[in-house]
Image 1 (tube, rainbow, N blue to C red):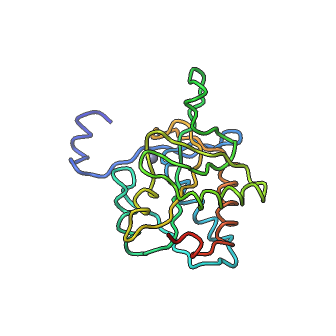
Image 2: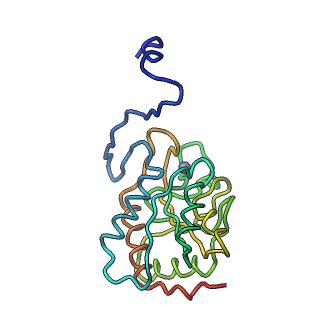
Image 3: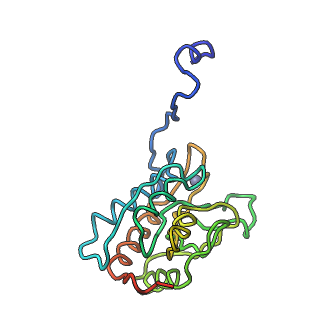
Length: 208
Ligand SMILES: [Zn+2]
């Protein structure tokens, strides 16, 4: 569209979105907004698979995570949970020219169990539990330390009197572009770990 046409059809404040289809490329998917549609996908697939959860589960797709974790803040107040798991993407910076130390996570090497990021230090017992399950069930996984950026876990952790919180992340290349890239096997590992966890979690395990 030309500049003049845009001005005729779009007003300041109108909602716009990128015109981008999802492509399957090898063992990966590429699309816009996999951050955080892929997290919602993991959540829904886990709910579909879970047969006998050992706790009451609330599934929330939050709004405005990218601009200040706002939806998570109000949702966590309302749900008043004992434990919170954020499902998000994270950086996989392993392109030619980037240093080994910049990778954060690696595409295709499994779900990332976050230890900390710049807004959140995950509950150590919760991190250990998730890692123990991944090891026991042979679920591909990697441990994540993200120097800058955060997830809904940062807001949920501070809700009411405090909530034991952690994040399961999907390694993603080209984050916040229209060509975000996530590996199918990492999505599978993320779902597998979440289902296994929800099948054995005991809420009193993490009370302070
Ligand atoms: Zn993001």
